[in-house]
Amino acid sequence: QVQLVESGGGLVQPGGSLRLSCVASGTIFRLNAMGWYRQAPGKERELVASIARDGITNYAYFVKGRFTISRDNAKNTVYLQMNSLKLEDTAVYYCNLRATMDLRDYWGKGTLVTVSS
Image 1 (cartoon, one colour):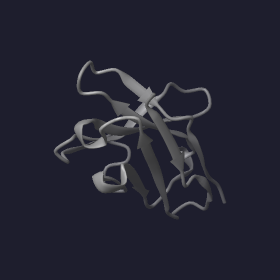
Image 2 (cartoon, helix red, strand yellow; image 1 turned 60 degrees about the vertical axis):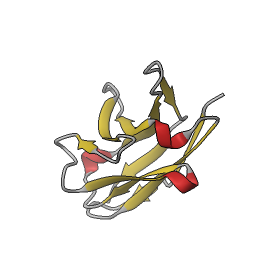
Image 3 (cartoon, helix red, strand yellow; image 1 turned 120 degrees about the horizontal axis):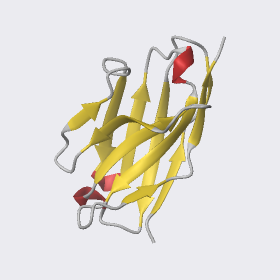
């Protein structure tokens, strides 16, 4: 019943910016941790950033200082502001919800980010 819908992906030049959004439904959003993961061709899915219910954030080393995760509980939405994008950031980006009750992970279908000149 939990549904996550991502948006905001697209084509951007190196050094450019994008903002990804993920709207959650079917859950009490503010009670759950949220995150963004990505999967590039030929690679495993990896954590990009996460944000706990209290707003504490965690970032992968390869995006720290460039990306910012935030949440708006009134809109049931988590964001990923992506600045100074690099070619190696090209991937499908997935929204993740980790349920507080049983730590089960829920996933969106993903949004493609392509960084290319």
